[in-house]
Amino acid sequence: MSVTQQRFYTRVAVTGEPTFDQLLALVHLLGVDSDSWKHDVLLVDLRKVATPFSNEEQFAIGQAAATSLSHMRRIASVVPTDRITRISEKAARRDGTNVLVFVDEKEALAWLQADD
Image (cartoon, rainbow, N blue to C red; front, top):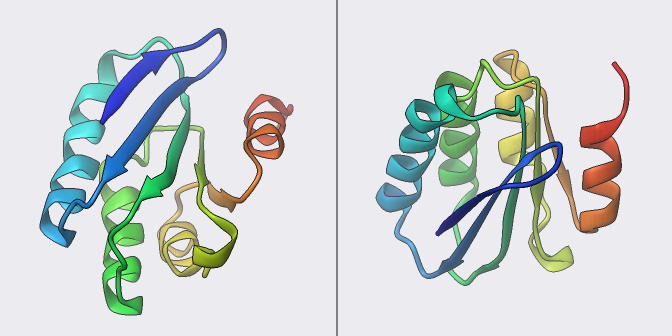
């Protein structure tokens, strides 16, 4: 995982084969660390995550994002086209966190930068 501060957003890139528990721990860690970030918008790049997650695990990841990252104004998640289900997005949004899943990073960045 890498975290970089960009011009108007924070970028988190996750790679490899994290387990479900590792990914949940990562979400909670980001929730703690993000309190000190200079931006309130986040791009999470998951395109290089090889681990398949079940629908239930995706739902739990969305709930964890809602719990840990609710202070973020917008969160864009970028995933490969063949892995887009929107399950985690729906779970996070249901709990009040402004998350959208994208397959195109440019579209994700445009949404992060858009006026409310």
